[in-house]
Image (tube, rainbow, N blue to C red; front, side, top):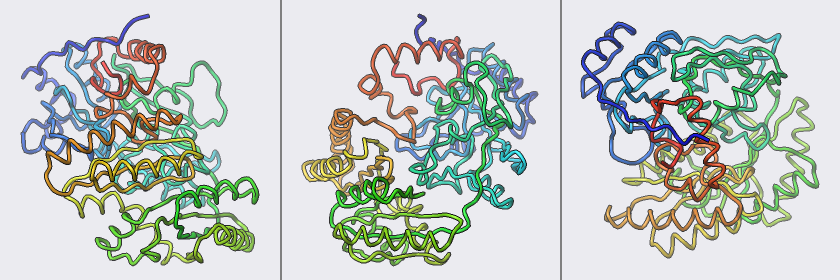
Length: 473
């Protein structure tokens, strides 16, 4: 079985840059250091790593021509959407060409009869959702950064978000794909069909591959009917274990499947109230659990809301806040969606990871995070998707940077060991990228890694596409 391809990449020549200007318009080939600085980082911490050149492509044919040039020249290519990633996946770690799909952002096309939407990779997730909603349809994948992140980036990381508990993640809606291989071949698989077992599922292969196998240039997603009514409950608890127990009882005993099950602990609540002035209620609660119920029968949704609130109070919650109008719902959701940005405004630096554990392990994991934070004398704010065991762990800098860097590094090393020991994993939705490759040999066995290397070699034998990402060597 072949090993991972060795990208013995060369420096980009002036002649290659001139050829890029022939492929794309000269104004879409960027070499000025000031303009390249905007492509030197994403939302992950770390030093900027500018590419040698950035090419803003508009079509699959331009992508194919760029990749053929890169293969001939043995120059690395880093695909990039809108640069909102949190793992360094869209940073040109080895220089070369940064291939941006930001201009591939034509209006999504909804096909209501076939319950699908076709979109280009530079379109934001929010635009996809709004285009579907105009037809009474629903694209439920809901990352917190949906107004800023691109649908191509969602495919690259197999994004999930708040509604993954009920609806799942990106790959479960991806029905068709157009992509360009590192050899410069345009491939198409699937389409407007909802069942397809014709050969290997290339949609699933590319979802979560972080731009290391091919560059997605168009995608078709399944849509659902848009629920007519929704109600949000904000439930204050003294302990996260109470929130976990509530979710288990809601599904097991009440046989309800909430669309959203999120949590914010006390530090996050105070940060939102301080920075956003959002006036979130229950500021002294140890944890707030946000649950969203939805459906087409308003009376049934309200009855389920009352039942869920009663169950929560029997477990020790104070009386929940029920938000059944757009104003109250917008206030709650603004705080939740802006929490990561809020912490970056409140603290000078934030190091963030997105661990995932089995749901039953959530209370022990949150308790371990709190104990680790005390031991390392760090400000740590966990939040995220309690319904599917995905915790965002943000270590916020206060004081000396060198001490904070050492402490946060030690903190995460211990946390990853704990998470893996409890049957969890090192990332749930942000991806491995450049930042987490050091944990891959702990997270994945040698045989599994070898299969991944073989897959990479089959798609990209020259190792030019997003080198240095995902695989540890």
